[in-house]
Length: 99
Length: 249
Image (tube, rainbow over all chains, first blue to last red; front, side, top):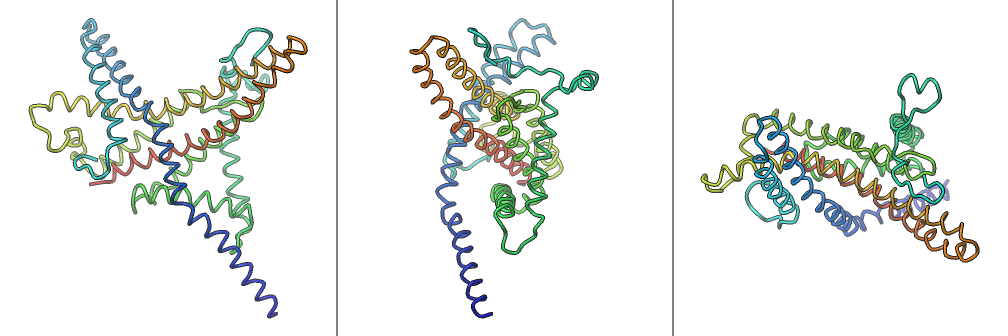
């Protein structure tokens, strides 16, 4: 009985260290992962903005029969939106204003 | 897949009817089949993982609990206390995408996340949920976000369209990221696998040289395992970020 209890305590401690270890390591690992996630995001954020601008401009041109006026304007705005997206991604967190 | 001396890298993404006449009649392609398989796998994993209901979990139960806690922490840390409400949604998204990415790495299988139709549908779902939640929580104040605080009013005609485009680009970049990563990975697999076959046709020298692309493919598999989980994570965390903005007052 007593032996059984100590073995349980041992197993519990072992389980706790097993469980506790990843919790300790979670900090840097998590940081690393979100850094990689950020790197994976940056490129498409930029392309996404431009693509939406071009598509929207093209669609408006087609709809309203403006030859390429909206396409030109919205491609530029879309490019700017892409840069804004990337800036949101990399800006320091203490930056005030719209989150 | 690669056949003969030509490299057909995009053939692997083609949809065609499966399971014979029934599939033909129902226009059933590999994509929905693999989606169903992915859902069943995730459900089976959770069901059988949690079946023992042990206080000190076994390996399988521990794995299920770690997955649960991982996504729950992700949701609550990013969104805040309101994140609990969205946790099932994010959990389902994360594991659906993860299962899809990993199922696609099995030989002869199909990657449904390599189709923009699938990823864009997922991204639009996230986008619409975020908009609905924003409108519900913030009401019409939601539209005030399109004008950056503290910016001169004279710049509004320039800033507001940029903000709107930036907002609209979210589902696009979300879907393109996942789709492009999956397509790129599988195209690379196919190219290097084709190299192996083509070099092996050159006799002894080719056999020796073919080891190179084979080794690269093994390394690529490791990379793709990382990319698969990373893209699912990015998708989930971006969903969390969008929902955090939605629930913020």
